[in-house]
Image 1 (cartoon, rainbow, N blue to C red):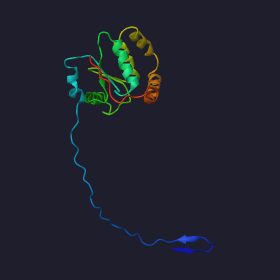
Image 2 (cartoon, rainbow, N blue to C red):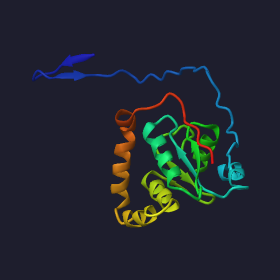
Image 3 (cartoon, helix red, strand yellow):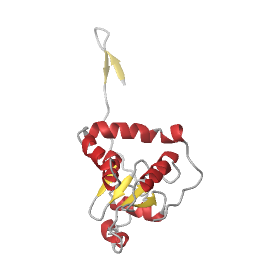
Image 4 (cartoon, rainbow, N blue to C red):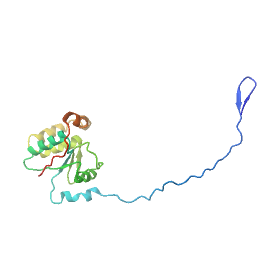
Length: 175
C-alpha cells in the first residue's frame, strides 16, 4: 500500500512477512554413480601385442586425409605405420585411449604403445617414421612454435571438406 507523505513522496508500507511452504514432487531420482571407469590403455593393449608399430588414425571420409594416408604409404617403404579410420570401432577405442572423445574426427592421431600425438605433433611424428627427407624436415619444423603449427593445422582441418571434399565411404588400407 502506498501513502503520500508531505512533500509529494510516496511511502510504501509492507505487511507482515508470510512464509509459504510448497511441496515438490520428486520427478526423477539420480541413480548412484556407477564405477565404470575404463582403463583405455589396458582395454586397447591388444592392438600392440603382436605388432608394436604405431597406428595412424585418420578421417576415413575426408579426401585430404585419404590423400595423406596414400602419401604416407607411398613414402613408408618399411611399413612402419599402420592405419585405422577414426570412424571405425577400433578408431573410437584408440581415440579414448588418447584422451579424446570417441566421435572426435577433428584431428589426425598417431597412437604409439606408450603415447599419442594429435594435430601438428602427429604430423611431425608421422614424418619421422617415413623415408627421407621427411624426418629431417620434421626436425626443422619442431622449431616452429606449437601454437603456430596447431593454428595452421586447425585452419586446414576446419576447412578440409570445403576445400578438398569428402567421399561417401572410407577407403580401406591394408598393411
